[in-house]
Image (cartoon, rainbow over all chains, first blue to last red; front, side, top):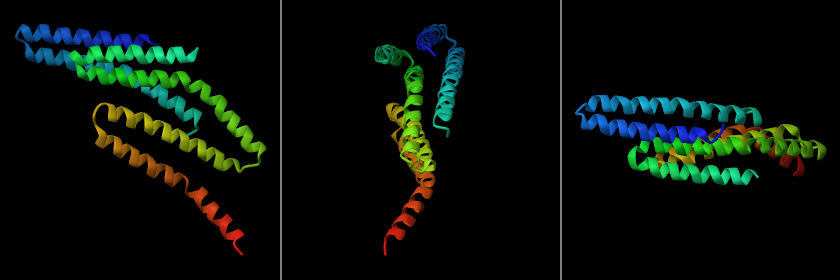
Length: 64
Length: 128
């Protein structure tokens, strides 16, 4: 639960953006879309893990 | 000391979001959600002290502890719904934000029914 998660997301975002441009230039639009979707899913799993920890702490704290 | 961490996380994520918004706006939303989660979790452990203080004061002041527990539960619900509403508003989906707000209001009202009924009984007892 620290700051490097943010940097990981930024890195993946930039990487996917670059890959997207490279693949689009190389004429493979479908693979470019695939890499963007893959990047999205990876970041989604990371963010969902953090959100679930937040929800668990809130639930135990406020005994919801 | 905590405030420096909070401000730091906020500013760093702001810069990252601005940078990401230019290339891939989807990742900007992820970064904003994660920044919110990080800051909230950071201040969570301070909340336990506050809640224990409230409980001890309530038990000392012989307030009905059932109501205090309910109040704390309602605060938690409001806390979570405010988290979701602000994220939805940030990403431009104010319709979803208002739906979440409406839903959380209904949940809170449905939970506070016992308090309202006991208040009414109290008033009826007082009236001649």
